[in-house]
Length: 195
Image 1: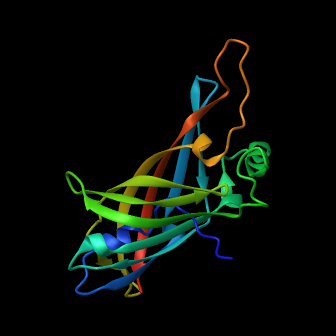
Image 2: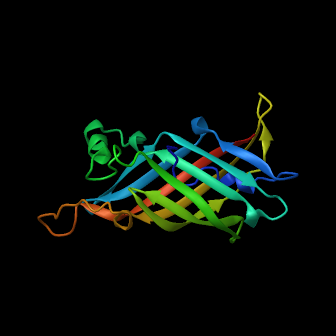
Image 3: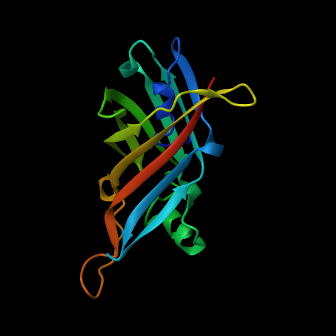
């Protein structure tokens, strides 16, 4: 079973300027997937997912016909706190034993404002599939690296509601309110190489 995630990395690939339809692959070593969630109404806890894969096909003649498939291994969650990370991997949250990956598959690409693109697709997380819209800034102009590979990058953001995906764990605070927010802010810096 393919362990692929959803939140966007190869989005840049499909937007990169090419002379013909081209295939791209994200570079996990130079791609960062970050998230942030409100904690106890007073601060934000931030973390990353460290194992990301993905591919895309770019159609230069009509970028709206390009396609993206991207994924993250859920067990790679990292908030720099071992105890918290183990809880996030448990059945209370990501349930990584049952749902090892998150997958994003694009359905529609539309030109946005000021060099941005709106990428609509299906995100499967925690056994639930929902439509999400990614805001993509870029891509950067493509460049050749010292090894001769063509590279490009983009910055991607979106906001997810964890309860939409069946992740409902929470606790009520003595002072009122909930320990954890529902909104998860996602920010991705992606670098992709042309195949």
